[in-house]
Length: 215
Image (cartoon, rainbow, N blue to C red; front, side):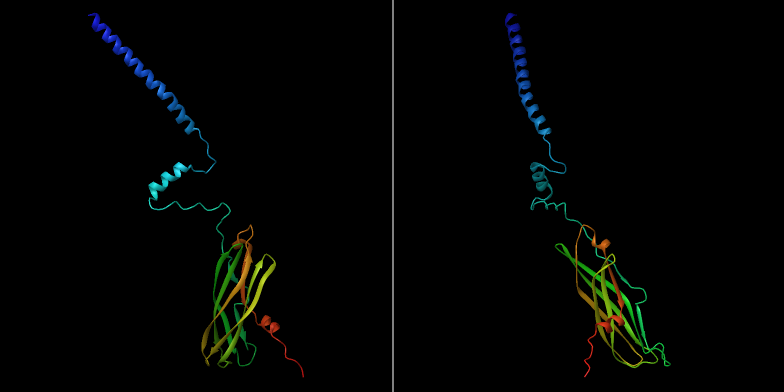
């Protein structure tokens, strides 16, 4: 009987010792986890361990794409429009025989490419020349001006001449491309800061033509 009580007491003591050992081990483990849980990262930052885990989980064969710098932003392309009253050009309308020919702009297009702190703009103009009742076929020059403005300030203005061959009583299409436009990218979106204006400008073409020397 005494032997049985001694054995039972020994088992209880052993169980208590095991519980104490587990408690002793649990304390530093809990402190360690608490320390990990209270590690502070900057706002938006990801720990190296989290990054590696995500790489292995989602991209087992490649690394995660690097985040873009904060200062990189999406920018827009300035709009292009026709100047009022310059979409159509009639020649000979006041003559007794009527219109000799008429040139009209039918379509506009532009393309913008960012090059560091500048933007290169290409502007395309498409139109058509029609021979009127008082005209004859031949080569007709259509002067098209492309201008870029920053508010009231003109940054770019150029007249490009399209030479169009037209048959009698016929019509022919013409195209003009101005690809020498470069503007600076500022804090503003170029789509909001700049505007592109297009129109047929026969007066500008004549003023820009070289004068003949008098003999």
